[in-house]
Image: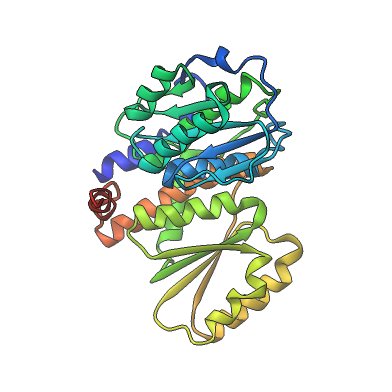
Length: 318
């Protein structure tokens, strides 16, 4: 199974196009004027909303993006959102419930789905709502972020003037080596920090450490941690590694302050530079790097990077 995870990471760049996406019923969205986009999804599927939100300017998306990680729709959405349910398997309970609730609240012409199959695809076809689908293959949900993102892009292109910028990514051998080198420096529990504009990336790193490496990992962003979290290190115990993801710009002096505090507590900190000239390139370079890092960490800990047995057991609880 570990070979499959590595292979899928090596092949990740193949996901970054619309070639592997099949669309149906996109005409159901035509003529609509949407004033926002809502991405509903959980786990590896839900992080697509965070990626979209932080990259909205990069793709010329000029309406606000909201992310729903629940099965209950809040009452604070805009008047006419494009509601996109994203579920890798198509069987995520919360996402299915949100999809059905959105149809009741906004009508079928405001709804779309991105999925690899399951009940969400069945419901979408039954209701003739816009859908972008793909082949699951032997991917895990967290390894399919490229497919799900481009599924969302296919939906957006039907109604917005979005366009993917030209981009050039780092080579796989370099990202693989970098990930393996980073994994050797990680000890104990993990905290990942970044600026707000890369929060989607630090969240994805955290999720991969959880699911792939089976490590306790936590996430937050600057400047928020300056107002609360730094006090929590006062009485910290055990082994921890704090990862500072990419450039901290005007907050660099405050990052250096925290690094000194951590050093005094004998807590390891790592600065990880993400290759890329802009947020879009950093997003995909950073995602691939996170997979190699968490996979290598799993290898060192003799953990199966694919299995998520606790999550599977929890899904059986009703």
